[in-house]
Length: 78
Image 1 (cartoon, rainbow, N blue to C red):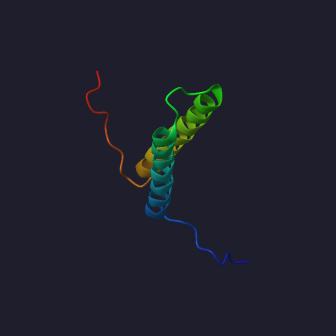
Image 2 (cartoon, rainbow, N blue to C red; image 1 turned 135 degrees about the horizontal axis):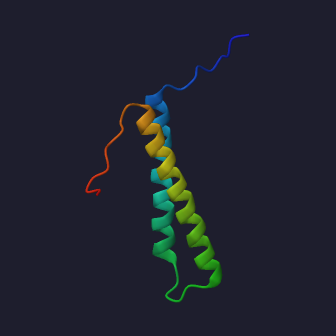
């Protein structure tokens, strides 16, 4: 049986993952705009979760970009 939805190509994948990373970054920004002057333990836990999500999506974006032929050498490395 043939699938009705064609598989994504590398370019589509990297764009989709980049959009998800952008959304995660915006979520971090929105959190920082509304955080109280004295954060609670709940605020700190939420911030940690938002950062972890953003970092995971950044890694996924980098991997997808490399798969699409957009690998970039490390800048300023040793």
